[in-house]
Amino acid sequence: QLDLYIDNDATVEIIAEGFKWSEGPVWVAALDALLFSDVPNNKAYSWSEANGLQLFLSPSGYTGITPSTKKGGSNGLTLDSNGNLVLCMHGDRRIAKLSSWNEKSFSTVVDSFDEKRFNSPNDLVYANNGDLYFTDPSYGLKGSDDPLKELSFNGVYKYTPSGELSLLIDDLTAPNGSAISKNQKTLYVTISDRSYPRIMAYDMTAKGVANPRVFFDGSALMSK
Image (cartoon, rainbow, N blue to C red):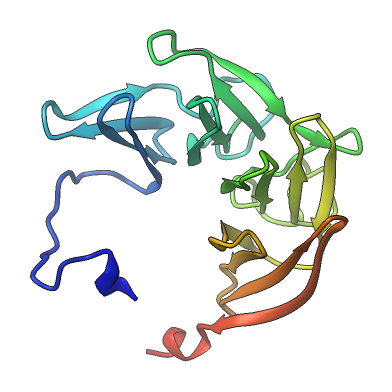
């Protein structure tokens, strides 16, 4: 399948390096640039053919508005239907939107469930109908026993354009990456649990998700 998108003669090229932990890349046509996060350093960078590597946001995910253990930067990045940058702000423990490409301030999209602050939102993806799906593990905290952790689980959520937040999944130890199939019927969630690393698949329904199943088991790779 990759042959449909990547030329057989393509080679891997390092375009930038020296980051502590890079994450969440997204291509922004309006900037003709790639944006990505350096989570521990609380920064986000842009890279383009014209300008190379440039600092784009600092801070990118922790602004001090709420208690945070690791004070991490942005993690997953995406664009909404209007082309706005939407960020998982690890340190601020919220999903937020960048005010504009020139004015580097943030507005909160959603930051809590059942009046309890999120753990540390990690990755996010929009469905074609505008629903936002995102994961909320505790990577930005010290784990399940961190006194700052207000939720007893690590969740996967859906946030609709009308502002309705629903908890879809609450039984995953370490939900991480998220993706939606091209036909908009399947939600994929990666689980970064060293004892059982895997990719889960769920049928997307009007009420949430159903039919959980293991799409890929990475356990054998962990032993190598």
